[in-house]
Each structure stands twice: as C-alpha cells, then as structure tokens.
Image 1 (cartoon, rainbow, N blue to C red):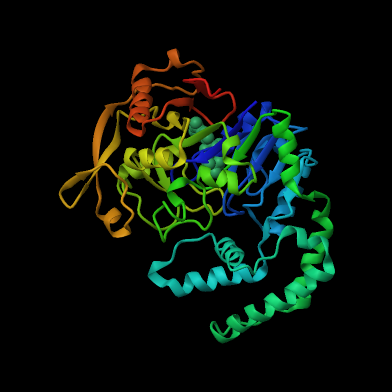
Image 2 (cartoon, helix red, strand yellow):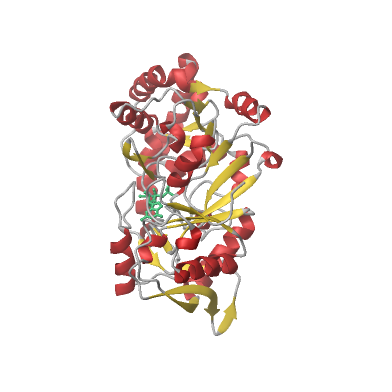
Length: 427
Ligand code: GDP
C-alpha cells in the first residue's frame, strides 16, 4: 500500500479534512506534517460535525494511528481542549501520537505574535495570533522547546529559565510589556506534561514499521501551497511549508517513499488575511460565492475573500508540488450559477503572462484573463458517478484539469464522505 500526501493546493481551506477523513478508512496511519492550531479542518461524518486544529482527521477510525509530526508546532492547551472535545463525543483518542521532536508553542510566542502584528501596521500579515510564526522563528533560531522536553521536568525548568530571561529582555525593553514569570510558565507546562505524556513518542520508528508492513500511510498537510514561505505570496505567507517537499521533512518519511501527491483544490479560490489574491472578486459575485459556500474561517470565523479559479496559480502549485492527481471540492457551490469563469493567464502591465510572479507588487498589478464557461444549473449534491454529472460540470472539471496540467482523481459535491465522485482512480 502506498504513502499518499494530501496537500492544500491554493490558499488553504480547500477541504483537506474531508479527503483525509475519506481516505483514512483504509489507512493505518495519518501523519500531520506542518502548521499549528492556526489551521482548521471541518470534518462531517456519522459521528457528527467536528472542527479539528491539530489532531489528524483520521482520529475517527479506531485503530488508525494519528501522528502529530515533527513539522507541527503544538499549543498544548489547544491540543488538550481538542482531546476533551473528541472524548465528550465518544471518539476514541487512543490512536493519537505526538512526535517528541514537535515544537511547543509557549505563552511568549502568542504575546510576540500580537506585538509584532501591531508593530507591522499596514503591513500586518493577518496572522491568527496563535503564536505559530514566533514558534517557528524560535525553532530556526534554535531557541525552541520540543515536546520531548516535557518528559524531563528538571531540564524543562532549566531551559525555560534561560529562554524566558531572553524573551523578557525583549518584552520589557523593546515593547515595554510585562515580563513573564518562569515559575508560572513552568507550572502551567508541567501540568500539560502530565496530561500529554502518554502520547509523546519517537515517531520515526513507528512510521517506518507501517511502511515496512506496506500499510496505507497518509501525510496530512495544513494551509495551502500559495502560502508557502518560499513559493507563496511572501511576506504574506505562513511560517512553515505546506508543500509536498515538507510532507517528507515534517514527518520523517523519506521523499522516495511517497507514492502519490494529491493536490486539493476548491472549484474557486479563497483566501483569509492579507496578501495578493489575483482573481479576488470585490463585487456581488464575490459575495454570492461567499454566501453560497458559507466561506467563513474555521479557526477565526473571518469572512474569506473569494474569487474565480486561478489557473495560473494552480499550474504553479501543481508544478512545485508534483501532484500525481487533484481533488476538486465544492463543485456543488456552482449549482445555481448561470456561467463560470476560469483564469487562464494574467495581464501584467499590458503583457499576457502564464507564470506566477514572485513579486508582490507584480502580483498586485496582475489582471486575470478569463475564459467563460456555461454553468449547469442543476443540483449535483446527489450525483455519485462521473457519467451522471451534467455535461457542463464535466466540462468545467476537464477545463480545470487542462489549465493546471494535472489529472483530476476526485470531485466533491458536498461535505459528506459519500458526496464524492471518482473521476480517475487515485491508486
Ligand atoms: P481544510 O482545512 O482544507 O480541511 O478546509 P476547511 O475545513 O477549512 O474547509 C472545508 C469546508 O468545506 C468544510 O466545512 C468541509 O466540510 C467542506 N467541504 C469539503 N468538500 C466540500 C464539497 O465538495 N462541497 C461543499 N459544499 N463543502 C465541502
């Protein structure tokens, strides 16, 4: 059985949770490899409707190991409340495993996130203020504290004392803020350690065993490719890499062991927070997409910015991720639309281009070049087979496949597991 990476292909919120939830049925392990509790998946299944931020979406299948990989930054309070929420709904959480190499989000990370966003003024990134960026910054600065360190409280206290001393200098001298107390932070994190201890493990060997047994292993991404630190709309990006390359780094699964890379796309585009979104519709059409699709953030409740499908960004995303196939979600959102547009190129300063520019100022000046396609004006939510989809919907999906240069494996016509149509087999 193969290893499948599930990657957000646009600006996040594409419906990765649903796809993981569906594929997890046959898998033995789901490994989340990036982001933190700034990501949010909504999963609807026979047990109910769940909003997950850290725990992989495979948790609903007893016997599936759900690993929070080394590439994730973990807010322990948020993880514990997610565990409690699942337990209240009688979901068996014994399958959860947290990599001892995953970094912790600390109280000072949340403080710095807020202070730094304020000091950016007009250039604010629009972060979720959950301390994710500062936690990844500390990881790179080699000042991070890892899950495994919760297992040795004496050394945890020593590390905290050193790091907090440095953080307090910045808090008090640069931001004129109150210093943090080492004792308070220590006693809070010692409590988390007691609660989370049974879940913290060295995950490399565990994953390797599943691979050796040829079990299906899913690598679950967070956010989307266009928010990647290197290839996204920098500096309006996330602070870890949502790309397929990081599925390997953030989990410990070597690149040559990944067999399939699935790019999850919405039938249109959305973005939360600041930064370029070339096909954004700031008119009634944008409102219509938002209201029909109920595009409001899982984590923050913020209205998402909406626009037509951006084929230029999609092709770029397919290229840098090496998608073996795509999943197009939310086809049903367009059920009542008389016609649809797909962006096939950008017009930049009078010249037609088909590449995705690196420069923010170029991206802001790009005007989408659209092709218009007829809508299908039919309810597709009950369709289960490709041949039963209206020809205009088939035509729309085929168009997206050809603009992004990648085959489509699945099309989704609703949030539930069964509301999925196989276009080409994944395996
Ligand atoms: P994720 O972070 O990529 O998992 O995405 P979110 O959970 O933020 O957003 C996806 C939302 O779309 C969830 O509420 C899903 O239940 C829902 N969803 C997924 N696929 C479809 C679909 O084909 N149609 C509709 N209407 N909703 C879908």
